[in-house]
Image 1 (tube, rainbow, N blue to C red):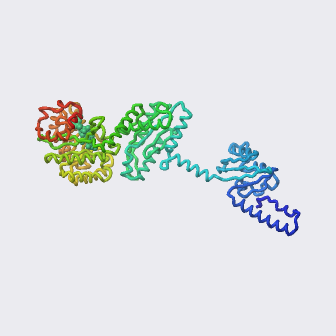
Image 2: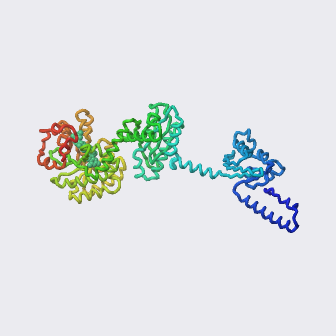
Image 3: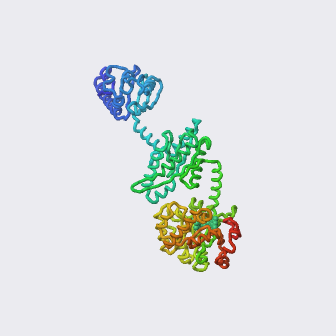
Length: 604
Ligand code: C2E
Ligand code: MG
Ligand code: MG
């Protein structure tokens, strides 16, 4: 196919001597071949049209791209006539699937240079450049950029979507929110932050591939639960977000949040593992809770934090007061960070009283924070924060070393009980820390008892049990604290041979008012007796409670009735003056009032 309409035939008519003419023909032929090669090796389609509107030159790619036969221009038709009949541009005016054709011909008829990018009916994307010539006519190049555009689209998709779940990512969520805010939808919308509870445990215990599969299944469930108009995004490791219209009102949004929580918490089976995962939801509504992305995201996050603090597995709407409590929380966190370096922690000790016969078995070490501005802060007020900030590991290590060292000053066989947090079970450090605290203080291992709670077994059960067995081999005792407050207390008793079970103080308090509390105490003391486990009742404040516990066969008691937690320098005096049965004669409660930290007035 001669796609070059060259002027070679006219060479013979040139008024030149024969030899020169021959040479000229040869030279022009060479040039023509070079031009043909150059044109044919171009990846673009190219054509040149003269001032009469007829094609003078084009390459094979041009014909192929426009699906034209090689002889399309042979009978002297104009360029526009041929292209109007081409499968690509044909019927361009009437045919709605080819709106690009009208745009193309407008460019052809225009006088200036132009470039358009068009998606043709067969999905090819063409970049067409139109260059008018000084002599009249024009050159046009057609560049097939379909693959390039697909790659661009893939990159754009990747930039806006999460690779694991294929859900939109934070950037797209933000873009959608900003667009929605810009268009000022009067109905408003709700932003829900959905965060999986304790997802890290799944990754840690079952491995990342199972964690990833779980995230994919959660993503699918969230999408199924929501109307198609809602946008579900994955905005972090185990954090998802939902953007939805809020014209249905708060009640409907709350119901939907409930539905999401229930839907996500249905058990999953992944590679033979049954997995249960909870979720918490924080909700901010626009424009009520913010009219820009930053405010809405922050407020949904605060509401989520509140849902987690409220025990997880629930939803919370943003409220203005959350902002104040978060500021206070941040200030406390900052001070807690500084407290370690400033040596602001102290230990108090509360006696554990053997009931039959009455004698002191030992003391529980309870942490206090002497804050320069706030005064003495009780463990309940800052230990959860220290856990959240991962500060509990260094603090817990200090507690262990200090308590062991202090207990060496007490007469044998008095023991010291130390509370542990879940974070201390992560990694390998705990067993070494305990061993070195014993070695350095010289405390006999049987005089140290470690208290764990059921919640630690709930998470990461196997790893925690393995550490407990190693600790037991060192010779320390292990007790189960706050027994009865967890989900399946009885099953934990069978998992590990605990030395002691501390019945939670809520049961002791309930003795006077709730018959079931008494029944639980009797059942637990009976169970402990038959399993050879010591039973300790926490929070004993009245003689009536003590009498009930004695009759129920409880072995040991702890509570304000015997003594509040005391500063360490008071213990020697307490030991010297304590007598069995003294609680009956002078109940401590009536002397010291009910402030659980009143004893710290004595700290100096
Ligand atoms: P816990 O281990 O169950 O400790 C008993 C808590 O009950 C102590 O509160 C104690 O002061 C309080 N208590 C004792 N007797 C009575 C009573 O008769 N009535 C009432 N109403 N309360 C009584 P505290 O010291 O505020 O500690 C709270 C919790 O903080 C502890 O509960 C324990 O879980 C945690 N904790 C304390 N010290 C440490 C520590 O060194 N490390 C860790 N990880 N947690 C600690
Ligand atoms: Mg305890
Ligand atoms: Mg307790």
